[in-house]
Length: 356
Image 1 (tube, rainbow, N blue to C red):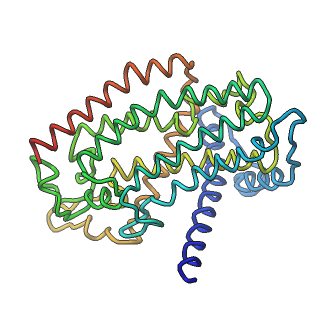
Image 2: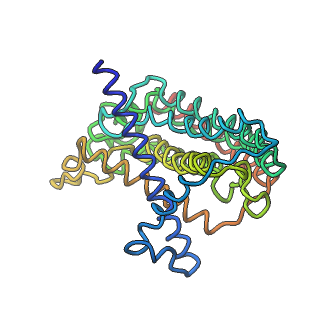
Image 3: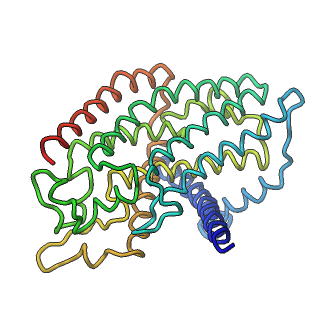
């Protein structure tokens, strides 16, 4: 019984966190957009408009959930739940600190990308079930998009896995920490095991992983349907894309899934490339900053700060770059990102064989 209670509390906590991040993220994105466009953003509801998002959510939850007369009602109703659950399940394997993970899976990384692929199925269900030409076009764009960005993203991730020799996210995170027993062997030609900090991150210990990180980050924008790859939604072309017909709670789940995905892909990038929950501060002589800022609570603080930084960059990019055409996205993915990611994977193999 205690087992089930524990996991219920963890599941509730993760859901609450994703909901709070969505509230914070929407407000932050409005302010970022306003700053970039030389506006003020929300100002009226609460101090500095901080309650505006809460007011909008409460209003949206009171809206009627309208099902179009010609829609496939079963697909239409199930789609938002599948989209959100696919993203929500991905949180189960994320490491939040030393030894702090909802589920300590040896195949954690594989599990996350397996369940995330289900989201596209939900998007297709939403587009087809709506019986709306704009919705089905958005859904088909999503299906076309996934075959573009999944390949380079997969190669970039494999580049890390080949170096780390594990799919366990806790182990990948631990290898990037201070006094890691893998320190000397992993680095190949420099010892970062005692320095710690930013020098222990994968992008510095194996410099070619910096390219893999950039490739993964670009692909994660497409995974989250964020500009310049928000092709399935494309407000100026498809009204709202695959969720054009959704109102009330259905729209809320789709919206929550998008912001949860932002946090999820950013946190995966942090774990794989940016030191996970390990401190960015190094040990320099008697000033043992890495040692002083290492621990469970420090780990939670560092991984959240790093993840929020990447999420903030996603928002910045959305309000800076124009949307790509579908053919431009495919050309970028197949002709640029995929060859570079494959090269990173090849270098990882050589790195592991010769330098470790």
